[in-house]
Image (cartoon, rainbow, N blue to C red; front, side):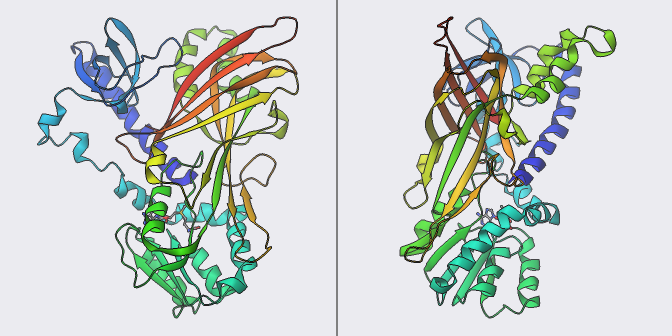
Length: 441
Ligand SMILES: C[S@@+](CC[C@H](N)C(=O)[O-])C[C@H]1O[C@@H](n2cnc3c(N)ncnc32)[C@H](O)[C@@H]1O
């Protein structure tokens, strides 16, 4: 959800400020440090460095906690810090700073953030999201009778409580790892459902249930569908606890992309520096680019009018067949036909999930987080190009998207977009581009 992201980006911002200050102080007299690449990275634009797994890089400066100025075989450029580890780190396991000693799932801060009300308030206030789950339970109430249900990551227990209130399951195992579980138990009791809803505090991967379940329901989706990678916990629980022929909700999910204009965001963050107060601040534009356009913009609300073409589903997940190993790299393709002249500033992404009915001929419930549906707390995610491109009706934008999970930080990923813009009009030209966005590491 945006929430953990919000927490996470705040955390990164705070540490970044401290890092930048500390690093500035000793940058001048520092000699380059040797680092080893943990996996391949393809740089985008002229200022990012490409490298392969195992390459030895010299890190000259660390201007931020995410991007370092590095050198490989005489070529310099920015490298994502999380793809590098100090040369010889494997032999220095006793050192506290070694990333292998830190939790790659960041459970303390992740579950810590779900232990307070802020995020639950944000999720429960999102009516589109919460009502979609209620509708799923309500429209399947007859089939849920006497069924065993698991609500993975129950939070305040809202989905479990819908089950108890609207259907008559034999039991709902409400599993929650954060300290919210203690309050959820109180809420279950307060509403008189302690005979039906059993709250279990623990990580879903570690808890024991007395039986297999008929239905596994969860609200696991993050920004750009996968961020947070809570989906892994759902897949592991499915393989361990869902009985053969059981049902998983959501039953499928899709990530959707559209090329778009983002004029006001571009003006606010980039064009701003052209002439504030009649002065030329353009030397700050490379910095603005690095600060605002190298990561995706979460919580973007795209106007349907800013879509330059019809959207396209780029990644589709079947929750019955998806495997944990599939999450490491997910590839998609797109082909858009530009419908009107405009400025191509970037791509906007969102997701949709479906809940297949248990009932013969029943309707599938859809939760769509796109610009043509009621806004949700996820909003949409904007990926800005390095430079806007003017496009005309009839131009085509085709390419690929790659979601690559961070090899170290398991809740994070990078999104790489490759595109080719072809104009068939008088100019008959074609332009290619590629850009990799960390989310967040
Ligand atoms: C997106 S929130 C959804 C909360 C609630 N189901 C709702 O709809 O309001 C996800 C919840 O799952 C919990 N969670 C995430 N991974 C988990 C895991 N592996 N085991 C148990 N709980 C988990 C989080 O602590 C958080 O409360």
